[in-house]
Length: 106
Image (spheres, rainbow, N blue to C red):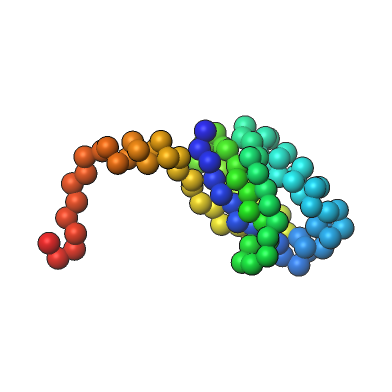
């Protein structure tokens, strides 16, 4: 199942919700979101910096991942950026593929 890294940033309203209900409630909500779309929450951490939360989710398809991101944004409580994660085995497979490429100016 494809893995995605979600970097989530709370709006002021979202931060108020976290302050009211706590971090564990957000983990439960993230797990429900992923599982409701046929996926699973692998890990979730709160952070200081450009994002408030980093979560790794397994999702059955890009459409399911997009649905999760749309739900986050539509809530008005958070925005996110999504990164597709690639396993070492997938990199091994890619490294074995024959590729034809001509760089600019060549």
